[in-house]
Image 1: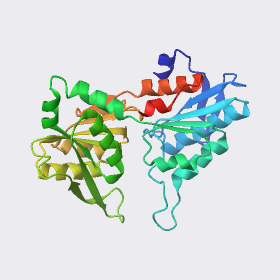
Image 2 (image 1 turned 45 degrees about the horizontal axis):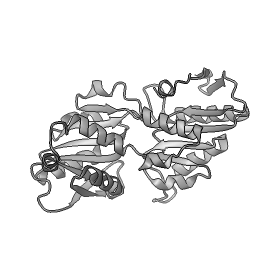
Image 3 (image 1 turned 180 degrees about the vertical axis):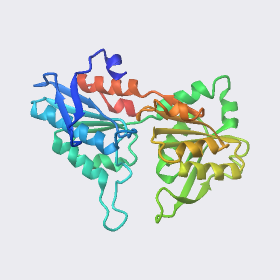
Image 4 (image 1 turned 60 degrees about the vertical axis):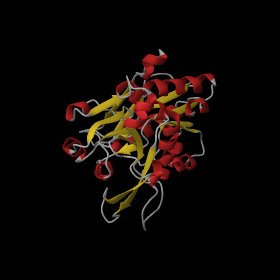
Length: 314
């Protein structure tokens, strides 16, 4: 879709495996002296793991570098290993920094991504990193699908924005200001001896601010939905009517769809196509998808023409 919007062809290449499972990459286009853009996201399929796609990306970058490309920009909508951005336990790696170093060693000269789980990841690079935000796309989707026909005062009575953790507070506050809605912060208490496990969620906000309202949870990523379900339970306990979940990166692995379909509180889960969602809608009627290709295409066009990228962050 990005190539269509930019009216440029996708260059042919060979992307397969040798008989021993090693990745094989061969670029067919002449890239000498040209600006190369490689699109690859952090995802997994039934046959390919996230690590397979990472290796494929690194080999394509290195192929372009060895073919004397003038510049190599990696478009990585969902940045893999972003949750492993610090050393918070003994004898653990900082995986996102290692991935950043691998990209640069392969030869990348610029990275474009969306809604990084932690903005400090940009500091792991010595090259430009553009971290685009899906905030305005989420707002547009909400206005089109859920707010149509309501006056602003009625929207304020019916809806409240919710950050499921302290890390997303800034994102939600900016949305609340732009949408003129009230917002609530939730604080997670985790049991770090268990993976993806949240013990308790505490609500920080005015008393009674949730009563009878539809809560709109906004977050950068959802994996097994453990955090989201815990948050929904607390919101309903505190008087919320129901919940709309809005996330940029819908990883949705493991028990995610079972949890989603069994949670009566969640009426809709809105996510983007930073991760391929071809089969997601088939697994739950609650899922809605918004498109990020126009934003990425605009970013690429501005890079090519020397335009301002920061204007896309406002």
